Image (cartoon, rainbow, N blue to C red; front, side):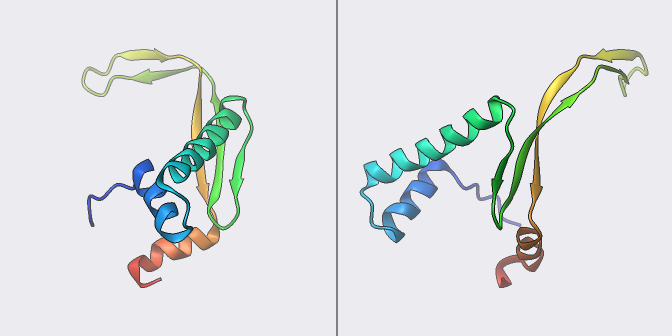
Length: 100
């Protein structure tokens, strides 16, 4: 496994090279897309990207957890969590690795 991380700069550089937008336009486009996605998620909407996957918000209820070190019971407050469910095409591509 590699420890490479895809960043915003990598995405905008790919747009610059492959689409032909200027570096500034590429950066602005990446920022606009990410802002739109995060705004939709913050408002409780799901975001489905065809052939990639679905991001959604899940409300978790309050519950009692346990501190694994001490064994003490600890209350866990209710919260909203972000979940991602990859599409079947994405699962297949990841399973194939760099061969796909």
